[in-house]
Amino acid sequence: LIAEKNVAIIQVKLNQSSTSMINRTLKVISSEKPKNWQEILSELITDPKELLQLLRLDINEKPASLVGLKQFPLKVPRPFVDAISPGNWSDPLLRQVWPSIEEDVISDGFSSDPLQESNFNPVPGLLHKYQARVLLTAAAHCAVHCRYCFRRHFDYKSNSPSRSDWLDSLDYIKDDPSIKEVILSGGDPLAISDKQLAWLIRELESISHLKILRIHSRIPIVLPQRMTSELTTLLNETKFDVVLVVHSNHSQEITNQVKENLNSLRASKVNLLNQSVLLAGVNDDSQVLKELSQTLISLNILPYYLHLPDKVSGTSHFSVSSEKAIKILNSLRDELPGYLVPNLVQEEPGELSKTRLV
Ligand SMILES: *Cc1c(COP(=O)(O)O)cnc(C)c1O
Ligand code: SF4
Image 1 (cartoon, helix red, strand yellow):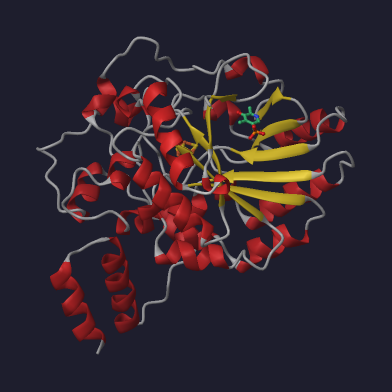
Image 2: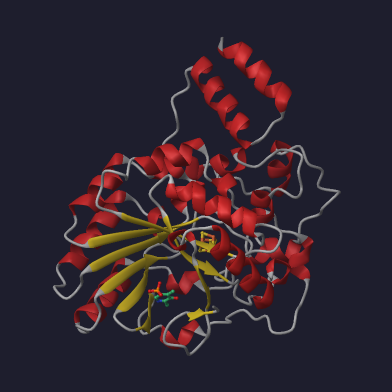
């Protein structure tokens, strides 16, 4: 039966859900033990040729940017590759991870630190830019390298948090009772182990003026296996109000595996939000964003922010003009209930909050 089903699916078209279904079926047939997230994290794809081989694409058609690769190496988790449709250079997921030659373009107004964040970096690994909340770099690395990343030039090495940096950050937070919320960011905060995360949360819990723990992570989307029951328990048992902001840009990223793993948070106290970056050739289309909101609500996730990409050098091919962005947002407002429309924002250096475009 399984074999017949697969033959039928293969004949239709190798799209994302059929590929993942076949992968799962093959796993059942070979009764291979599913890999845990640390194993998947240790087997990331870092070789552009291997990525293209898996996707049946020819590197001669679209050579990779050597400058881009040197600056920000290729890094893609295999579950994310499974969600890319083979043979399609225009796949919206591939575009987010492929170091295109367009990264070599030098554009006016694009720089390596467009947000001038170094001005708000009182302790290594800590950003205190907005009132009542601080951003803490819990991990210096990510499970994926998104080519549009505004931190692609970020000096992670000197901001790579050691325990003593964390202790300095904790002291900084302790000394400022106006801070009510800690945002774990990165890198990707869920790239650290549950043990490290538990330690950090316990330390934060000892600071009485803190009320909210927020985690910003792309890992639930690109490495869903990370969402273990241990992690859910950890988040459920903290005294904090907990917000998990996942980062998804396209509904094609929400595979059955992602759904399955995020569903495990349903019964928890964790508030789920999503933030996206508006990216040319990926999701600069109201239908795509509409579908994303509609897919996310089925997982209890509400849209939060839709960011205009920051003007980081090497990413100008992802730029969307604010006029186009506003048009897209207005279409979303016409077609969706208000709670499924994200806030369209932009990060401007020196502002006291993110700037809403409409
Ligand atoms: C985006 C951001 C925050 C959080 O802003 P919210 O509007 O609360 O989501 C906090 N600190 C820094 C440095 C940020 O970039
Ligand atoms: S997950 Fe976030 S921080 Fe990491 S590379 Fe992607 S956009 Fe950048």
